[in-house]
Image 1 (cartoon, rainbow, N blue to C red):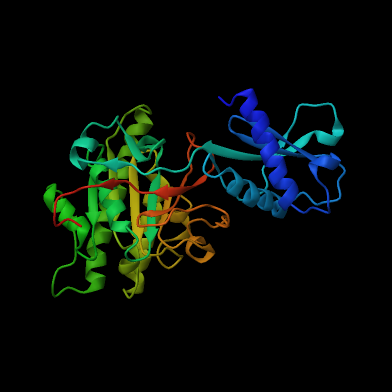
Image 2 (image 1 turned 45 degrees about the horizontal axis):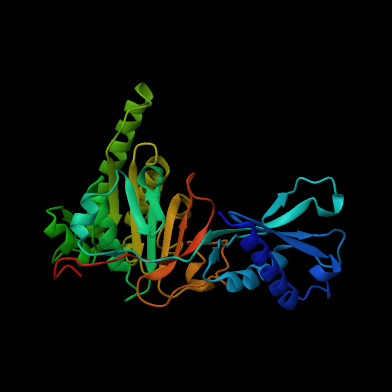
Length: 360
């Protein structure tokens, strides 16, 4: 809880920051043009209407930029795609609406794990810790995507997720580069679909399509079971595809279209039957995965270089300006869209852990 003294001090501090930097037609809180109300889950900017400035997305973003820097590191504002209006309980028509800025206390903090296998073996059922005070319930996950430039820590993040998922999900691993996911799978005695010598890229993708087709058949079988018993519990099945971009470039058009069609159907139908996609690529765009798959992603991670260009496909409505992103490997952005978390894009620090030599 925020004490009354802290609330008063924080309100005064924020008002001073906005008065000095906002620059809206010379209007300030001293002229009774706006006020700030502090809540446990964020603050409200209350304009006194009518006013000489326009209340729009531009104003909302400007307040975000000022307040996020002013509040760091005590609070992290949760970036919204558009102005977040809320109604206020008052009879005063001049102050019946406000702009809400949700926050979380503190800043994103990295998990440091001494023994990864021991740590993942004792996690609560279906829970995937991402950072301190941020955990995903896998029962609420549809599909996941990890994007990141080479050397950003993408494979390191994937290995962590695989280590957690092996205890809560069956895994189908597709590794076009025959790289770290294959080595991890060998250590844990899990099969991998990977290229072999003297085989064309289109032939390899055809094998993947056959495996995805079997998964789609499993979805249909599970849907039949759910029709008879809506409360039936299935074990999770996760289809992990590393370097999706490497699969979809330079292959036969018909085979690629089949691959895209299968991905789309699995993404659309897999949620209720607990069949998920975990897609990893240096970049995502409409040539890497279909738009329909992107729309089903509800856990999205971008690691490495963060700007409007790198985030435009996975975070189409996000302007990353003003989000304080830590420096270093395994850092970036995460968005979780489910009933447990409000709409939010957070600075991400992937867990640090130690694994067997030779996997990474």
